[in-house]
Length: 211
Ligand code: SAH
Image (tube, rainbow, N blue to C red):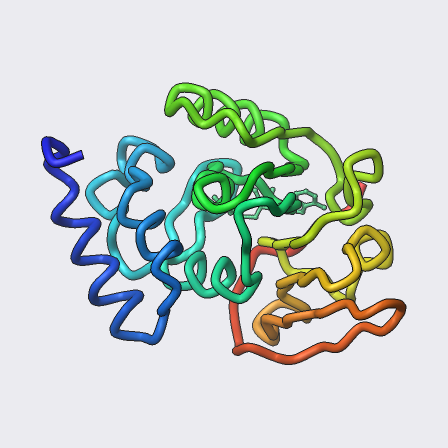
């Protein structure tokens, strides 16, 4: 990708926004240096695509700030053979990052036009190990469960029960919990029928909507 004029911007994003703030997983850093984030935002936002902030992606939704994408991805402790569920496909950027790191990604989006744009982008980039579907992600993706990792990119008022049920034994889920301006990014780890939860940091996501 040396002929990509934006490679330098991506390298700077990785160095200043990720490495300098403690993201250490080399595979996460490499994936984010490679995925062309500017192609996941509307043309009017492309100049800003490598900035340290979330950006609008249409339909009143946002793509998360690069650091949050990296942090959530790193917290899942991914292995190449993993199958991962994402709730909130949005632009498809987070799904593209995950797709570099695991065998199969399943991603659910409730807004049909966002889901369609994301699927088209992923296809045009030759990313074939992401399956997308339109629906209410709080119900999970029963037929494809269990998942080694679940990454939720919309804030839920409480932990959705179907998602905990669809987490494999030993699996991890990263999910923002709370409401409006009071949200905490949580890491949930399943051991048998026990779920251990840790708070990672405060965060600000769009709300998870049901129905
Ligand atoms: N991961 C995305 C960012 C998504 S923003 C990216 O990388 O671009 C959160 C997304 O969650 C929005 O697109 C929103 O429509 C979606 N969403 C909200 N509630 C949902 C639900 N119940 N099921 C599926 N998607 C939902």
